[in-house]
Image 1: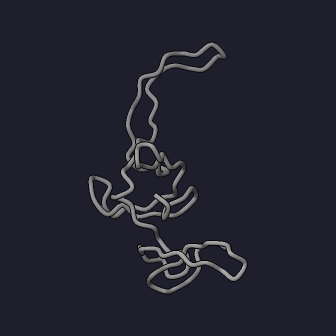
Image 2 (image 1 turned 180 degrees about the vertical axis):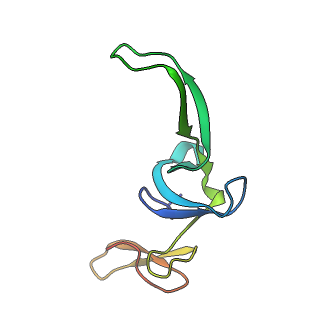
Length: 105
């Protein structure tokens, strides 16, 4: 779970959404899954709420298992595995295994 975080760009590597890319909206650690923007959409029937919220059929993202997602490196734009390094100041950062570029500053 440590290699994918919120706002990362990911590529789906298996399943019905295979090959599509999107941004992580939320990581669900207890389910070992993540919500990806505009991917794995499901329709939910909702009741009208109290504050004037309208009822009807709503499309929303369903979780995708983290094992089906691969991080896309912002530098080389390729799906990649990640490693971790410890900087001189003791901070741990992720890096791209393909181009060895640091992923966060």
